[in-house]
Length: 384
Image (tube, rainbow, N blue to C red; front, side, top):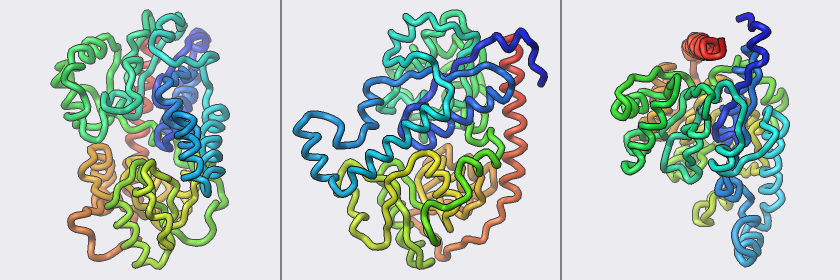
């Protein structure tokens, strides 16, 4: 679309989990901003980072009391450099790949006092409306927006939407959502939950990571694998024993090591470190995550975004217990890749890496075009 000179003076803000040191969170924020910038509009991410979120994502030996820091420094001693480098890679991505607001905000009250001069504010995507997230904040429902138009682009209520809104919050959420000009969601269960709350069936939009051309992700991932040789890439943001069990089975079948990027808070959950099946690669930021997905022989995980990027890079994958996560379930149904669900109660008897991604890529391309057209139309109507 040709953008008029009047449009170029309009300003759009995005608020999301852009500073969460989580691969999918940061990549979806980047993708949504790039999509809006690609429409020829001035767009920046509102640099909203609560103190809870900022503290949580520090390396473990930089959090808590002095005594706690010393204890964890000794505990994590062999991995301290890798953990700190991982932290730096996330922060570098944040400063180098986003167009951010000039000021950083740490609370809703700061946002309300800032008198932000945006014509439109977009909240989304990611699990910003999951009230059980440790870093949930009312700011993601835009009570600070004042005169700006309000758009929700594919916010998620979490893996199980019917259990993701606290009962005591329902009336406030209903009131805030009714102030939006446009609301969309990321999956059908979230759609049903919002219809129950506000009586309106909101359209379903794809995750922002699917809005960018696949070639853009190839460029960001790079052309040289950071891990040499063949490997299986395991990713689960929280420790899930079934994921590690599945990776063990696949590793034995394929005779390949399993690369893991996460260290978990409890050392009982880090027992994989002493197992020769697994190989740690902790210094992994968002770009390194893409590289590991792109060049893996196979990925295995309990993560929506590891499934997304496996599909985009056409890397064979298994989603462990994917039917329990509405986001993963609908992604695989949309792309007709339900065969990639690994049921931990009934694991597959054979490991298959022979996958045809043609249909999946075609479907994503069609959905991408439709969702970009929808967002472009809504923004132009509000900015017109």
